[in-house]
Image 1 (cartoon, rainbow, N blue to C red):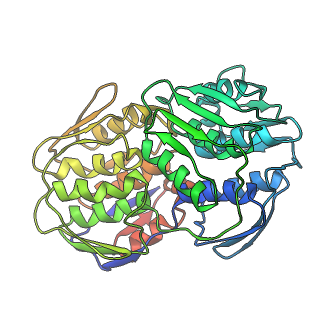
Image 2 (cartoon, rainbow, N blue to C red):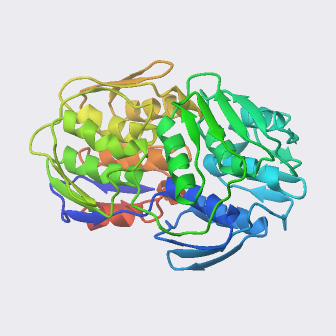
Length: 425
């Protein structure tokens, strides 16, 4: 456990955050399936990426790690598992991606992971793969899931998109290896569409083009293949959100460097939410500066395309003037924890007036007190709740080390900007 000490002003005003794990997850898959040797730099160091490296190694992919750089010898889509059981840890993204990649395996493999992973849905992806000849089974509709592998036929896949965009991204990643042209038809509203954009952009960087009709149909012509690349991972906008929010909350200033302002990641637009709350934003070629000089205003915002910063906003919203409503986030119920109900539960513990609906959080201005909060084994819960401690006295966070899932040095980065905390218990 740690106790966070309130802060009045930031000590450091220029910061670089780790590379994007979202882009890294996609690029690692593409490099592993490409023809040739790829060099990937600025790879973030976290549990999810380490599990991705291990999973690909278990599929016979040769990966050499030197600092934050990976050299990956691609398989050209021909993967031969060393281990018949792939453990994805806590990573839902990896679970869905590696399930799809397993369709190319020469042998049957089983994908499993943590307790929470065994509660996260995958049945729609299994059903989708079955439509193109890939046999899979999951008695509960969640991992463990077994995939026979071997061959993906061409044709049409019809799949729902309202549970997770990761199903569609996984299918897209392996689509070039189908025996014929492949069409993916989305039969419901597609959530987190920006993550699908991110997948398609990364595929293009590795030499494969996807034709599309908005977010309803995707067409991947046969005969394409991924080509090895030298690729540098830009800074992660979700990780950046905590520091932007801290500066906004403390009415201070911060500049983030090595950021791609044209990123397809939905969270890249979080600064626009903070701008609506009263902050000034200055953009550079690869940097963004936020200046806050007055108390934040409450906002009403659709965060369906930036789900991983919904908790960041929820943590600073109690300190704003006026009500804040965070809409269109039902899919957060299927993350590391139920991020709607559990976020509300923890914030109520420290005096926040917060209400929930099926797909939203409503937060009213509140006097935030100290107290002990739980992370529910959710890295984003831990990192978001820390922001409350910048204003509240004696906020104690249990199991803060869960941040290692995506941002192992988060607490050190907080110390860089002047946040003090002590370990207790």
